[in-house]
Amino acid sequence: MLLIGQRVVTLIPALFKSPSILLCDFVTLYIHILNVLCCNCPFFLVTMVEQFVGKWKMTSSDNFDEYMKAVGAGFASRQMANLAKPSLTIALDDQGFISMKAVTTFKTLEIKFKLDEEFDETTADDRKVKTIMSLADGKLIQTQTWEGKTTIIEREIQDSKMIAKCTMDDVVAIRTYEKDA
Image 1 (tube, one colour):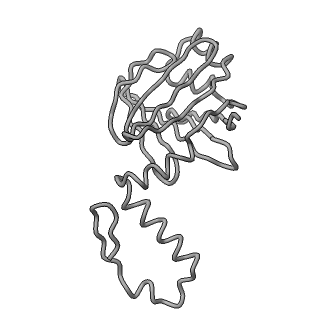
Image 2: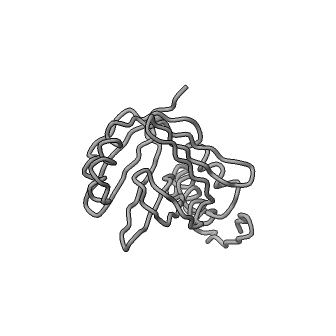
Image 3: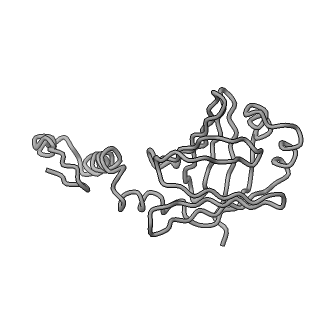
């Protein structure tokens, strides 16, 4: 039996006795089991979120104007967004709240949330959205819904960089951030 938080899972003993399962396969399986089962375990969530914690500066932005058009941002908002080079600070408090603060020369926005709990958000282009933040496969996923529309922003760490993939319908923008010292 494997006890994680308050969840108990009985694992098939033969699976772990098989000579065909190598150590790396066992580790991969164990990590997968943790990903599937521990999504509400505070220690696990803290460990997964910690990779995002810190101050990040944007270093590149590809196709963002098209993404902003797709979400319905007006010309003036798109022009400001395309000129902005935001710094993003992600923090985790001892109550389990995560905060994300985006600072540009034009505007400062901050959201504070718990994973998997819906909250109201006003975006940089002044959309009033319902947002849910979640963790899946090492990605911090932000799902925004408004007026029957949905956009998803997936953040993940790759080679010490944070990659934000912004998707609206078939339009995808990629924004890359590096840790700020």
